[in-house]
Image (cartoon, rainbow, N blue to C red; front, side):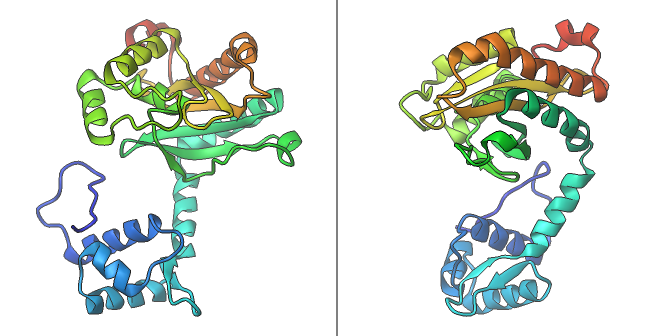
Length: 277
């Protein structure tokens, strides 16, 4: 089966075959960071070895893929990193949010994240780590990383903003796989949980994605009041206790999210109309 993905709406009728094949190669290499041989890659994307090799040769010339001279395995190239960083720098959301992430990290001495929902996954747009804790226990997150949305705080905040149809589609496509013994895996229970998240305005990941880690997250809204992103404070449970979340961190992250939303044009007097949007 060919690996393909549709990013912007339905599949176009005039899709260019070469671009589709290149996209399949990027996806396959991205899912195998240890590298892939031409043979394995051709099998993965369902293309002849000769065709796969010609595409890889062209992509390598422009820096989109690289080949290890010893193992002969192919990897994603640094040209993609350059393009990705250029895209991130162009995002107004990331630019606007950055000062508030830095300030929140200084206040809490914990990792702070900016996340969006992309292709039914939580995608990390930005991350700020406290200098104080860089030499100690750290979160494994990084910019560009994708994680399961149902089991993390930022993901739950973003899913809570979906319509019933969108949420049902998410559950049908992605499921609710168990990440830890605390992950909510029952659809009805998960929907009730998201209702609580919507009503209280924040979500807590209480070791649902990784044992030993806890986070509190809240949504960011645009000028129309629509949830477009989420920010979170994350860290090990030995530092981020449940009491600290409820007494301090939830208010701090909600205040920061509100300030970012205001910078994006959100008006508080519309909040009662858009809370469930």
